[in-house]
Length: 573
Ligand code: AMP
Image 1 (cartoon, protein in one colour):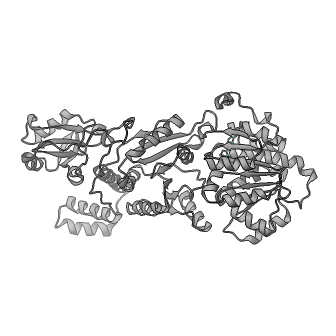
Image 2 (cartoon, protein in one colour):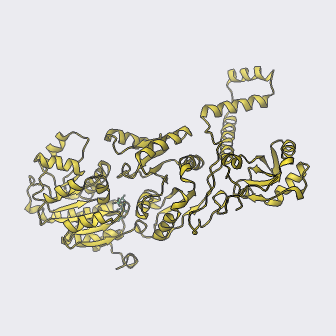
């Protein structure tokens, strides 16, 4: 049965063989209908089948294995005494995920009195040991601590009826394969085994072949979560040379200003470098390392939740199990290794009908990988130009203006400040004084040096960006014609500027005639215009740095980007 067919005749929870206590629990949680994975997995799991499920976070996979586990526990309860060894074991890659799963199982099983225990490393063994002695029904554990407790004789697996490997691919990536095999080998042959993984690399298939018996297989993509509620994720990519990725990311994030984002990096070293770059830009970024102790991890995550940090920089592994409900952005400093990994990452935003944003920095050689993601998800990824230094300066100035205006409106009755300014005004023009004050303010806020422009690149393959606009354009590098130089104007298509407007402005405000003006390129937020080199100084002097375009002042200067990079922004759209 295909997924769609299934969605069409999705059953109600009451159609599933779940007892009233469990139906009441899901109803209380506001689940109106089973998600596709729940519809497909719950019945067979209650019948005792093994299951191999490809499903990412957000598909409802936790309830898909937890509800059957609780149903079977309730069936067998009369035969079990309170001191019995655990009925179910769930292995997860991280403590966060273990806590989440345990919380879900506890909630679903509250009316059945299910005893659920979470065990993980980095916490004292004593209390976990004691709880195990008292008897628990379901243990949710990270593999390392589970082994530890098993070796100490505290965790008994001999009466286990069901074992779940949650996010198995992540556990393997984290090097838990031996621990997992040791644990599985210690469980009875008769137990049920369930394996969930967001991706299905060969290693997972091998593990499944070894430990699952004729499993039912279920494959769910994240988009299929709740009917009619596909995640709303605006996906944007920025084409940049690999060497400029981090600098470009700083600009994009400064322009985008996410309130709560995870920035994914490939390696730990990248995590540190990226955190440093973003912090230097005045963004509140913090690194999250897999090697951090739990207390530290929790504190960092807590700061993101409370809004004291805006950006959490992490590798996939370090970010495992984090479930931050108010995440607004997922940012890929690098294109993920696989389409599935990309989908898994962006599954963290756009939940419950809220809009999320996915940003990806992509070198030309990886454009094809994003195209593969588009094919997999059926959702478009738009290409956008990296904000230019001028864009960012203009945006910063606009923020300053807005802040000043707000302050002016809320009243400026600081007499001592007024007195001091009156003193300065006796000797200086007040506009100069105010300009100096704003410059000081900007210096204190730390303005990044965007002197070097980021070169524009073109995709490495014929399959160019679907909508390459402005600086993300697909033309080759082209210097100005001999004897000509290029001027940069910080207004473009977004401001309604057309080539004839530029010609008009230059011809009006300088001694150039229309015929002298060469190629004009209109980009999204800037324009480039070629004029004779010998006339450039005169033109710039008569414009005194700006001109009026479409009723607004626009700055005009020599195109430094071209001169500095040697292959700067000189190209047509
Ligand atoms: P999971 O994929 O297990 O991490 O679940 C993702 C989220 O979906 C969790 O917040 C669950 O509480 C929620 N959820 C699970 N099943 C359903 C359902 N049938 N209807 C609505 N929400 C659900």
